Amino acid sequence: MTAYATYRPVDFATDETFIRWVKDGGTEGDAFWDEILKLAPGKEKEVREAMQIVSQLKFRTREAESEKVEQIWKRIDQKVQTGTRPEAKRRSLWSIQNVVMAAAAIGILLVGFFFFMQQPQVVKTAYAEQSDHTLPDGSVVYLNVDSKISYRAKSWPDSRTIHLDGEAFFEVAKGSTFEVQTKWGNVRVLGTSFNVRARNALDVACFTGQVEVDPVNSDAVKLLPGERVYKEAGAMSLQKEAFEPAEKKYWRRGELTFTAAPLNDVFDEIERSFNVQIIRDESTSQRRFTGSVTLVGADSAMDDICTPMQLKFEKEENRYTILE
Image 1: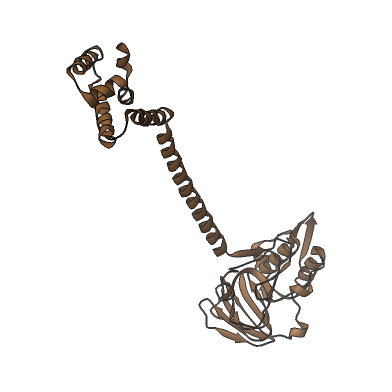
Image 2: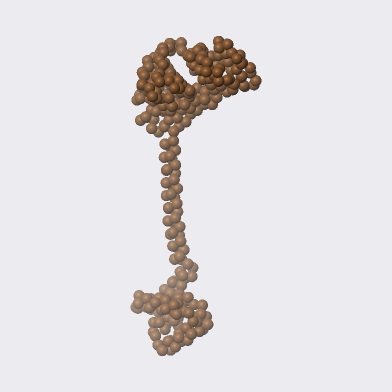
């Protein structure tokens, strides 16, 4: 009888003696189970639960034969012993977790894709490097050395807006307004070709069509083919001048043209074009240069600048030092 000390509710509920006692009653049975509880103290809770199980079975299967009752209890016992129901719950919970995790993963992917699609496309060049880039509408941007453009390809059909840092030549396909944004101001066109330099100053030249230049802290100006405007840092207004587009010398043709430009800006362009270093003092940097520079090599470019300015220079590897 001491084996009853290890019984669980399901063990009691499947014990033939226990089932008979619960179903039929009787004083002999009462005495027997009273003795069991004395020998196995602390089992009152398990016995009470087992009695409820057997009573429920008795109620539900009042017309069932005893053989069928035992078959039912065998199935119950097998399910409990093998853990069928708990396992089924675990599988169900695991399936839910899988669905939730899959949904979260899809959500993350969609957010990442949306974020990626909203990111601007960036094209840039290094020192001594030039490049051309075709925009979604067929417009072409020719990037000069050490320059960068950025735009949003996804929204391009609705907003032809591009940001420029450096210098670029644009051949714009006809269509809606095309806007180039720079730190110095904005340039707007419909269909044209023009050059924009936005480094230490703003310089815009119109080759075909019509261009509107809207600089920071100045009134907007419209340009026709053969007109150019520029504005230096600190200047209050744009300076406008004429040029001949067919004869215009500019970087895409292997030449740079400057009009009263600070030597510091001129030397900056040479450094970018040939990836060299030019050492100069402050007084030299503030002098003004007007003329053209051929971009066939760093040495010849330095000659084009220093000869008319009556300057000399020394060269050591890729470094030039200006001498007074």
